[in-house]
Length: 103
Image (tube, rainbow, N blue to C red; front, top):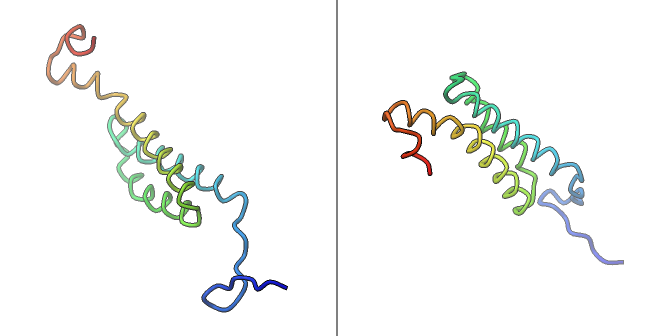
């Protein structure tokens, strides 16, 4: 009978949960939504505090590849949510004409 790998406490480690990656993606998406709502134009700044903790806690048991995918989802979510208003804001702030600002 082959020996099984043991964890640092001497017990047999449990296999990874099959739904852990779903929890990681859901946590990354929720953290991105919270961080987006904490930024302008919504300015709900208290929502920025739980966002990093939610992201880290939901991805801490994922493999490197799945954690990177969850990080990509988080990054894409905040990029889409935060920079969506930036074009209009730059037009107003710098008094640009839309035809010159974006081809």
